[in-house]
Structures are given as structure tokens and as C-alpha cells.
Image (cartoon, rainbow, N blue to C red):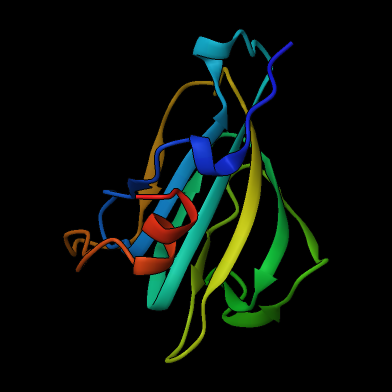
Length: 143
């Protein structure tokens, strides 16, 4: 059994192509003994994003706080998601997340440990961007 408080897990910058102002914490991961699913918390700061992408596995999302737009380029639309929303992303469905000015969002992602095969397809050639670790992250971690 593992029990951990989110503030005791190091926040890491998301360095995928096209990601902006996004951090994540691997709350439960394979080094912890997870052999089927991993649990990751994402935090997208104002004017941030995870670029549109798709992959060979499904995953589930649960919005904890804040709001963002779920971008569905395959359907040519986006929709706002808010706290309490649960989202299922089927395998190979293009998706991404975007926050606007003054908007931030913190959410959980459940994904399989073994991703058959491990391939992400990012629909952006832009480099990742992250200006600085937000003060609220360090304040909550007592740093």
C-alpha cells in the first residue's frame, strides 16, 4: 500500500512538444508497484495548454479545480470542463487542453501502465514553454 499527499510529490514541467505552462505530479507510478494504472495530477496555469495529440491508449480525466477548454480537433470543436467533470478519452482520439487569461485548471489523469505500444502523436511542432514554477506550488510544498 502507498499513501502520499500530493504536496510531497515533486511537480515537474511537462516537456512535450507544444505544451505551455503545464506541470504534473506522478502521484502513483510504476516504481510504486502500480502494474495496471498510473495516476497523475496535471496543473495548467493561465494561458497554458497541452497540445492536441492522440495515443494508442484510453485514459480518464477528473477535474479537481479551475476550468479549461477540452479541445477535440477531430470533431472541430472544444468544450469547457469544470470541477466535478469526468472525461473519457478513447484510444486514438485527438484531444488537448487550453486555459485562457486568468484561468487555471488542476485535474487527475488515470492511464494504463502498459501502453500498447508507447506512441504519442503530437499535432504541434512548437517547443514546450514554461516560464517559471508558480509561487502557489512552492508555497503549498513549504519551500
